[in-house]
Image (tube, rainbow, N blue to C red):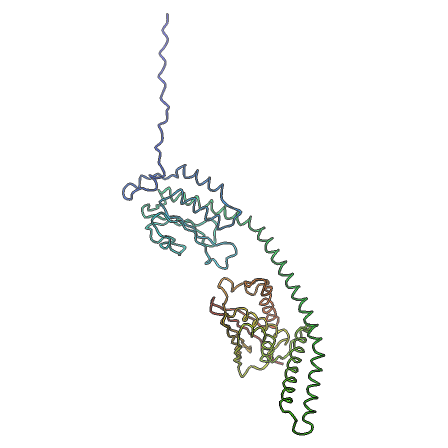
Length: 428
C-alpha cells in the first residue's frame, strides 16, 4: 500500500488586532517625548460622531445655529479642548462684523476668552486656526489646548478640525440657500406692508391738503373783519377801550399767521414744476422750521440756526428743498432725548468749489454704526411703523442728487446724528 504524502502545514493568516486608542488617551496625552508616538490618523469613533452631528445640523435655523451646533459637536468629541468659530453672516456690513461662537473646557471662565478672530483663546498655550475653504470673509474654526501642541504633522486633533471645517463650509452654504427664499418672501411681505402705509399717508396728505384749502376762506374773513374793526375803533381818535383794540390786533396777527402757514403748506403740497432756479436757502430752512413747529414743540426740541453771512442763494427747486429739511427736522424730533433736545443748523460757503455746505446736527439717540450705510435705503427704518415708512432719508438723498448735491450721515450711537449736505451756488 502506497503511503500518501504528508500535507503541507497551513500558514497562519490571522491578522493580529490593531492597537486601539481611546478618545481619552488621545486627548489627555502628556507633553514631552510621548508626542511623537501619537498616530497621524483620526480615530474612527471621532469621525462617526462628526458624521452623526453633520446629519443632524439645524440647516433651516440659520447660519448661527449651524455654527453653534458644529462647535458643540467638536467640543463634545474633544472634551479637554477649547473649540470656537468665527464667521461673517450674510448681509453683514463689513467683514469686521464677525460673530464669535466659543465653547471652553471645564475650569476656564468665559471672560478668559479673547475677541481677536486670530486668537480666540489667548489663555491657552496652543491654538490651531482652520480657515473655512473658499471663505473670503475671514471665517475660521479654532481648537486650543494647554497640553496638545497641535502639531499639524502628527496631531489627529488638527486633522479632525480641518475635516470639520469642510463640513461647516458646506453646511453654511446649504443654510444660506435655504434662508434665501424665506428671506425674499419676508422682505416682500414687509415691502408690501410699507407700500400700503406709504399709500395711506399719501391719501391722508391729499385729504389734509383739501382741509387746509377749505380753511383759507374763514381765515380770510377773520383777517378782513378784524382789520375792519381795528380801523373803526381807531377812526375817531382815541379808542373807547384800548384793551379791546389790543385783543383785535392779536386776533388779526394770529389769523394772518395761520393764513400764511396754510398758503405755504398748500404751495408745498402742490406738485413741483421741477425747474431749478435761485432759491434763498435760509428762507427755505426758516419755512421748514415753521412747518415742523408743532413736531419740534411736542418733542421739546429747539432749533439753533447759525447762518453764514455770505450764504445767499443756491440752485434748486424751493418746494423740494423744503421737503429735505422737513424730513431732517422730523427725524431729529423723533430721535430727541426724553427731556428735550436741540438741533443746530449751520451754513457756510466753500468758495473754491462754489458750493454751500449745510450741517444739520442733533443730540438725539444717534445711528448705530452698522446702520449708517443703510439709512438712505428705501423703506429701511429702525423706528417701527408708528413713525413712518422708512422713505424720508431716501427721498432726501434723491432730491439732493437731482440738485447736483450730496449728503452723508455721521453718528456715534447715543451721541446724536449729523447730516452734511452740499448744494451748488446759484450762478447765471
